[in-house]
Length: 83
Image (cartoon, rainbow, N blue to C red; front, side, top):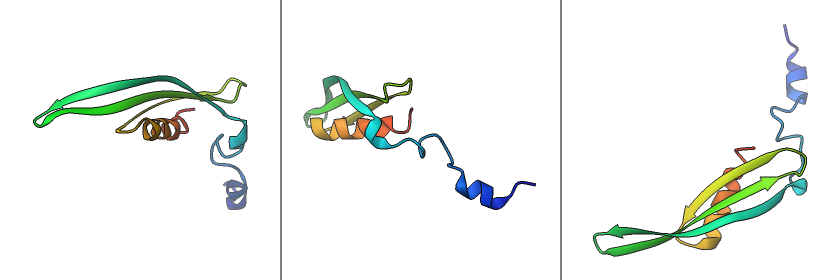
C-alpha cells in the first residue's frame, strides 16, 4: 500500500516542477479570417504560437479572437496544456 503523505509531496505532473520563467514564446503566424454572415462579413484573427524551454520540450497552441492581442493570449494559454 502506498503512503498517502508520499503522494502529497510528489508533484502531480512535470509542469509543476519546472518554473515558468525559463519558457520562451514565439509567434509563428497571424492570419486574418473572415466569415460571411447574414449581416455581412465578420472579421477575426487566428494566431499560432510555440513555447519551448530550449531543452527539448515544445508546446504548440492556436487561438482565435476578434482582436490580435486576444488571439495571441488565447494561443499562449493553449500552449501551456500541450507541452
